[in-house]
Length: 285
Image (cartoon, rainbow, N blue to C red; front, side, top):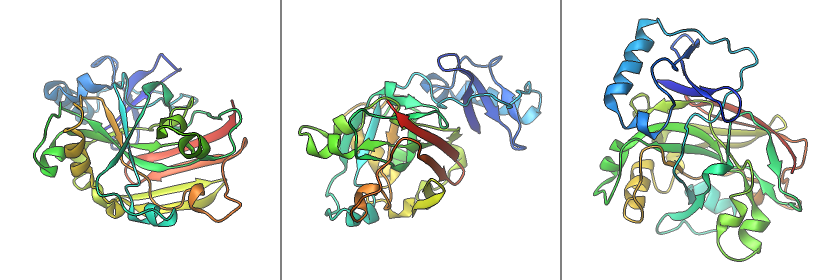
């Protein structure tokens, strides 16, 4: 299923995109698309049955804002340097273990919302990423197979990053990852049953219409199941938590000087097969 949240910021309502591409209203069945929904198989079954019946009310998509498809996110965990190609382009050795950082849930915006370049920023960068949404509580998992079994769905993410803040200002990466609006997610959450293998997905990103990233999740150093297993030994993962699993080669930081970092007025579009497409205009904060 393709689950969405639509409407004004802070007043989003749950919706579903059916197999014909028609937007349907879910607010009569559920209150939100969140961890509680993903963890409740009986409610998910009712939603599937309602979708298949074709009786869900229609929603007029004209002019309707699409919000982030997951509400009430507890935490966002980022995985750094998780593609062989990305590590190579910045001259880094592939890590022996996953590199972790955290993003605040209040950085999340919708897939087509404006993204703000921080004041004083000269190195705002793009990162197209596969996002994993946890569907059941994960603690001390034993295998990558178990890791995949705890995934509730997948989303498209642009892990916007300020490289000077992240790398040159000391401390942790978090400084360059948590600026306002730095985590566009969506347009929809695709339930895990529709993604039999998350390691075969094309990942693409354009800046002002020019293709910059053209990768595939098969290039991940640590695949999705292993990432979930690994994280479960350092923190408890709860339904609705989001993991952003790294970016393929093609970021501005990996380019020759002068590196093409983002400026006000730039437009970024992101796409992963099956997970839809985003479009963000960048403006000054």
